[in-house]
Length: 291
Ligand code: GUN
Image 1 (cartoon, rainbow, N blue to C red):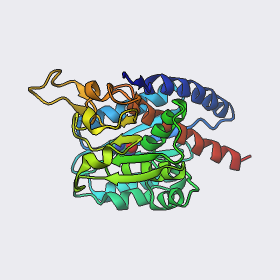
Image 2 (image 1 turned 45 degrees about the vertical axis):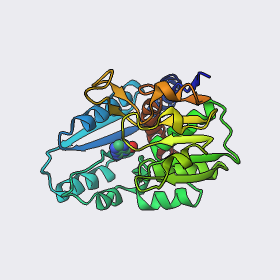
Image 3 (image 1 turned 180 degrees about the horizontal axis):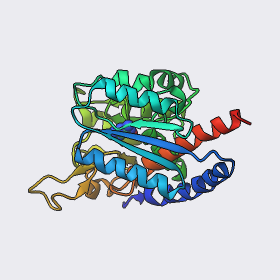
Image 4 (image 1 turned 60 degrees about the vertical axis):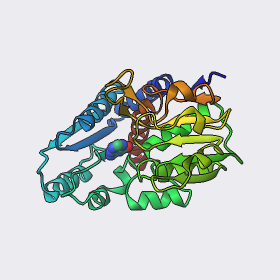
């Protein structure tokens, strides 16, 4: 079997064209959507992600601001910046690129973002709303995965979904969304005993662990749908060293799965598209309130 490709790049492009039209409609009312992205330090991967987010805003006709603080910036400086953006009517969404340096309390930073502008959906209030089934903003990566599953007409009700990874950014919200869609959900992680036992039971397998090509074909149930959230570099000494790869060994997995997301071109572009979706939603809510 060779799996169907779930093409995130194509779906993201489709969605972004639609978002552009909605942004133009808002701009015509004097309410152009605006996103502020804050980067602390010079982590090269974070720099790339932030640049991609800002470029996506420009292409969709959104206003955006990139704020770069030095690696040794204090928590107070970061919180002061967030307070100013919370009060700025041109900004509808605020994103602080994670991970933050250990000297800054990331939870306190995320709590400082106005829940109405929390387009990542990481504020405790928004996580609570998601858990209760009334999300205000759905975290971008798992939201993008759900859109890809929907587009691929993957039925979820009554299915076994297994997620590898328990992060606040992907694993936990992914579990909540799959649960809400009627799947039976298992979250595996680095301490899980006999990971393969769980993964081989999965009708839907989501890999979000940050280990290059970790999930091989023999860990996958024949006919499963495989979602690869990883963005890694192929380690030295392996074929294609230095290139981008996912957490799934695509070559062996595609022979077993019925559908699979590629890396690049799968979940990554969907994450950015959903960030635009959340920013647009935030701006449309403000515009609706202002009549
Ligand atoms: N770092 C990796 N993924 C994300 C994300 O979705 N949002 C933020 N803010 N930081 C990240």
